[in-house]
Length: 230
Image (cartoon, rainbow, N blue to C red):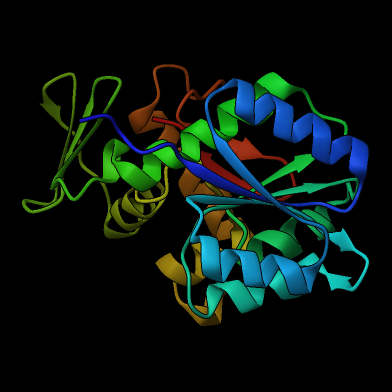
């Protein structure tokens, strides 16, 4: 029995971009539904139950951030933001509101499709499919035994390093903001203590990465946060 075709909801009011995105996704085998404003986007999300939402922030009847917040009240569907807004403040705002990823216009069809596929893999399986073991490169994390091995050898992590690592690996391919990570690992009282994160990420990379100065898996999103790439 064949797998159902993934459904993508595209919420974008610019005709040219909407056509470009739709064509790129349909050529890669996705089923695409469209909306041009916040109100219609929420209706389509509720009735279509898409596997992913692609969203422009600047919509004619409201801000895409409000749509994300409304959507997050009842759905955990992956949200990829497309926006001409390029500042770190805008990126962090979208991610803190509940978006999973942020792609700045202009963008290539290849990058768009790659990010969509990455998020759908995470949603349908990937490294967080309910397994108690996470593996990437030569690293093996046993969530039940709370052990970490690299190349078959045990790796000692402090409690905070372990919480940081497992929080990142629980969200593969998603950009997590500094605030999101700090709150999850250290608590709300440390949400602004970005220096904690820099120090611990440096320590974690030395233990997890083949080349800590050029990490492959614990990747920096400059000015925004970090992304785990399996």
